[in-house]
Image (tube, rainbow, N blue to C red; front, side, top):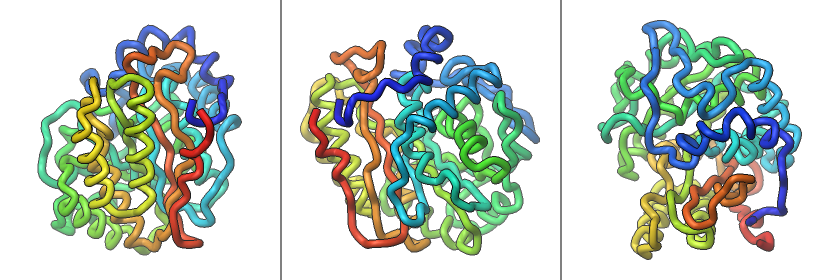
Length: 333
């Protein structure tokens, strides 16, 4: 493992009920089933597959992951980067990220996801409905801010189709409900991986939410399907680039890793666009420090296969002492 070995209690709790579904959906995060979205409240699309569909088990799992999470590292967290695979595979790394915001005050959580169920599209899609339902209840959507963002005319649309069946935002919502209860969310699906367009989207987002105490959460997994050691190398380079707060630097790092032609590597970050928007927005909001919190891959789990893995990482961007902290990547294997 890239971090000191940890066997989170929550992973063992989840193992019996999520094993079959996670093997189908979680390590391979490039498809989602159809949702039952409504005009007002989006119903869960992947409950029982990516995370437990029973309220008690879901709450116990999230709290268990958070209890085992690494401590906070940023003075004033403005943005997180967290994975979106099934909780059996990436729940602990996601909790390491969300733990950075626990106990802090926010009045808005912007969840930036990617699109697994529709082709690339210009700009980003904002969900302006009444809420996102999970087994923990309905997380309210800040529809007013959603409408303001759409009305700003800066590449954000109100097309809800990219949100139908998409898991990259949905799997973050239970963490938001436990870590920051009652705080409204703003779900956004980013449709582009062009660094210039993502930088403009991030700047526009920052202008709209600037007066708020907002937390940005970018949802992405890392390397898809290389063998274990190749994933470690690719993920280290990509995570280090995220700490620069530069969309261009991240895009260049991903291009370099893809150019290395590692066998089996299909993508370095399926949520590249979401992360680039978060980097630009966080920097515009005052972030000047990035830190890698944790990294692992599906080969580190109780059911992992080292021959074909998906990578996961957690990064926090905040205000404080300027610079980057990638020490988590230097820990002995």
